[in-house]
View 1 (tube, rainbow, N blue to C red):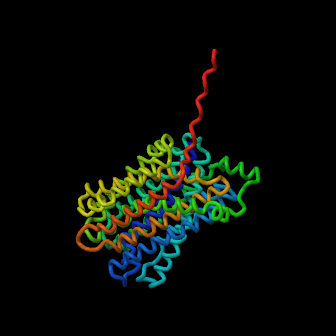
View 2: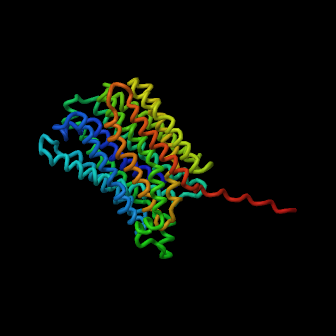
View 3: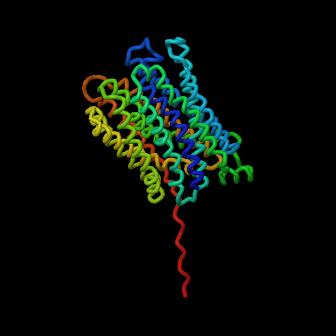
Length: 425
């Protein structure tokens, strides 16, 4: 299990590194480089628009790779999705700017971002099922949480590279070539991730499906016909998690550097510190899910998110590093209270024959609702001199929507094994 969990974590770390590096670049440099004819606000919105395309393509990726996972095995998904995302990310670092090739530059950026999202849409389902379907029932939450640590590792890698480049290069050097380096580095990381996954075995549950001839012939059709309500509920339930993460990691970075005059280095440090704590807490929250159930932790996380959004925005607006960090930390703890158990929860909600498709589609539709829209909506709402209370209200409303959806979902934690009665003398 340790070897499988490490392979899953490594792969999701690389894939999310690829995805997050684009979000950081969109917040910092892509607007003026690829949309120079726009105003600063419009350029940021346009950059976040290309960022959103990655989320829109993720459900499509979950359909394509989910079909592969349910028909041909979880293992092929791990290789194909990682390879696609890695190649697309390296290519982003090679795209000439608007000043060199004109309107073709943002078009190429859009296409490559779409391919990034396509690959990531398949990665999560394959990585999660690799651990969840191998894990013992009473520790499924813990072992399945390892792929959920991957995004934190990927985020820290992506922003650590950006932070180092931002601190060591001049503004002109960073804009000219420095921002491209993290995208080129994705090729080396993808190669390492593929190497780690070469010895990963197929999951026992899929082997059983294949041996008994019970694989779904058309997984998406079965999901739409038999599980459409479950897909919509899981998408709505997880939307606030995406919104929280990208409000902290992407929107707040752009807002603080552009509106509050906070340096890139300070903002990246504050955000990275909060995400590091989130990653460290993940397995402990997952163990609580194994002990007390998946649904109670999800309800607690949504409630905490609803209560924390206005304080978070107020702390962000102070522009004080320690206070901003505390605001981000509260949001990340609410987020991981939910998402630490999701990797076990979603697969348990779906029957094995359509599990790769159903779990991944619900998870990635939530990304469209929460991840794609949040930076766009928040940037459009954050005007004026005072704190952007409209952003806090938007995030609170999403938290309440997710809370309602989690309320309608069942608990799935396996019942503990019965204690054997003592044999009478």
